[in-house]
View (cartoon, rainbow, N blue to C red):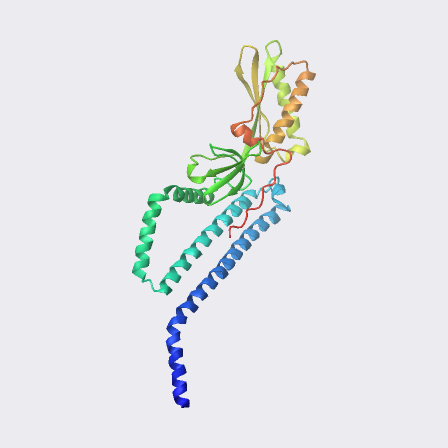
Length: 322
């Protein structure tokens, strides 16, 4: 009787194994997927944090905004790393989801050839119905890999100008001078004008009346610009010596004289405003009247540049894309 009972239990167990085996395997896969995603996300976050911390240590600063004013200027590394971290998190999440679905379907009993056929049909449907999405994703990846823009950059994307707040795998978010947040599809970006890479040039045009001594006015303009460039407060922001480009144009009322200074990108507005104020004061003190200015309308790259100033905006950290 005992042997018969043991045989019956063993037979029932053997009969139940084919049923519970796939269920246990599927449960293990579904449990393993979020664990894998957590591990991958943790690795990406730590790599991003280490690179950002290393750049800030080398520049001897504590935050990204101060890093923009650092002589070593490692902010490009920080911006590009944050953007790449967000893209990598998104790509990793999609890969884990797709692999999990394929493994679960194979455990259910769908053959490999059927999976390949389904994948081919899905790819065909994707190519026909989601061409714009694929274009957005590929363009976004290339823009980040080629360092065309990064978080905190002042850019002109054609459709919008302002500060980049987030670089997504499909959409780039840009905050303009009026505070409007623009969502620009990466696939629609045909050109990128970046004002935060390398250096910038302050260009100031002054209208000198015909009755004034233009030569003396030019000498005074250049002297004022050089005094600004050599003051301790501004030496860290000015890269090169001021240049007087001379007479830029001649109108019916005034002679337009142009002076330029090569500066760090994030200091362009500060230096330009200070230079205009000093030139206005010095020329009026010299008895040279200045014509009235037309109304200034902020648009295009001029409007984008005006987002940054003595207190540049703090862009939010790139949110985690779970």
